Image (cartoon, rainbow, N blue to C red; front, top):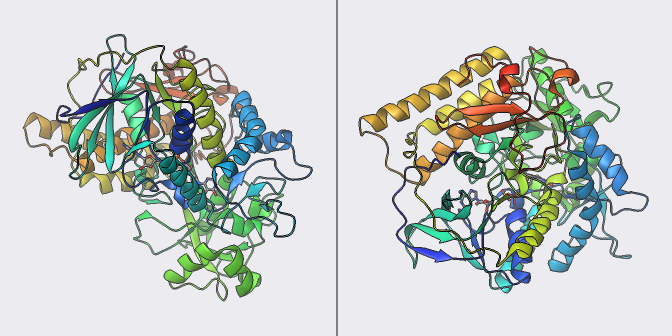
Length: 575
Ligand SMILES: Cc1cc2nc3c(=O)[nH]c(=O)nc-3n(C[C@H](O)[C@H](O)[C@H](O)COP(=O)(O)OP(=O)(O)OC[C@H]3O[C@@H](n4cnc5c(N)ncnc54)[C@H](O)[C@@H]3O)c2cc1C
């Protein structure tokens, strides 16, 4: 089995736990709370503060069939349509049937959702791709902040051990290849400083998304794909990496804007905002029966097409007809963000364009969150449970974090005590040379121009060549002893590079257009060849090895995917 690690000093300290949870978003904190409630010794390790991560930024809400007349079946149908034929239906069924109670348990944990002041019933809104009002929201458009607040408070109240400002580097495994803990680097001074280890027989990766692999994203700075990169180095399978959702309506801040950009939630369109071009033409009419509320990929493509046709860098979201009172009451966060950037949505349309938003793929798991490495789980955005298929339905991700965290906790608790962590063994392979910190911006630009909303063979090949050059440069520098020092910046850049290489390899392999993967040179969906997932492992030579599942259902994680080898789907100049 592949076991590659980042170049890092040997651990100088260690401690033990039943389970290490890596990440403190909805997925990590829910797992930690439920594991601790069952009596497990939990350590939560998180890269920045407990509330740093995408969860805090979620605006629209959580989708669940809570409304009168709505049913899990209808939620399932909408999810399958958005997933463009690639959802694992049994994983979706679990999501939608267990979702309503998982939201109720979140409320019992302390989250306060917007409710009718007279009846107390939770208010539900609509978002793109949903045929019903089924999105529960909090603080108007500050759902994630409330979810995060409630979970952080509960974790503190439960006395769960947390290690903040600590970057998890790699998985530790024992001689049998089973999970034995993690190595981590604690930033700053304290009782535990520098590189150390937490030994545990179970590790839950809940490290969130990988938006920072592109130059413009809605994701916060911590979203550098660390969990996916760690899993690949540890020999786990990752899947569906080519399906990156670009949010259609991200505030356009100028041609050179980079990093996290403010999102204008789909809920604004849900409440009736229109997408218009510079001449005020509503270009979504006639494109889809749901017009502005079509699934995200349709809207992102339509905006990108219109931008091309009109030679502009953005379109506009027009919600002047809401009036000041509705803006202030329903969308206070977005209103404040717009005004902070000199745009008043009450009196003018908001300039918007698509930016990287959500990773539908990730570390392949089964219905209990197991990855293909024994003892290693993945949850939330870093996982690929199969519920999102080729495109995530809006507001299903917080729900996925909740539902699958609870399933993982049950599994961890059921296996607790069955095995002490094995003795970690040193990897046979030498450490991976680290790229320089300046390479981060280079790779982000390569990814945005070559593997962004619009993809084709030439653009993807250019991105692959550029990434290969960065990899070679890192190896060359290591050979000459001139490589960069191991530090948070270089470790994160190494993770971004590995994730970018894998994503580009998958995007080159999938020669069709499906969901949020749009190949201009293969504009049609091709069910005959591509009604299947791409699964990647890292070879001992450190190149992505792509295979395909026989169909849309994932085989059990105990089964390494061997069907339909990538050779059947050749990649030009595979990197
Ligand atoms: C602007 C925005 C709006 C959104 N709106 C919605 C919405 O309305 N509804 C919805 O369902 N979804 C929404 N999403 C998506 C949703 O917020 C995320 O998919 C979800 O919150 C992910 O939760 P998570 O727990 O998996 O990851 P996160 O909340 O991103 O948490 C990841 C955690 O892992 C930590 N971490 C990362 N790497 C390491 C490492 N190496 N070592 C230690 N810790 C690490 C991070 O610091 C962080 O604590 C939105 C996302 C964004 C960015």
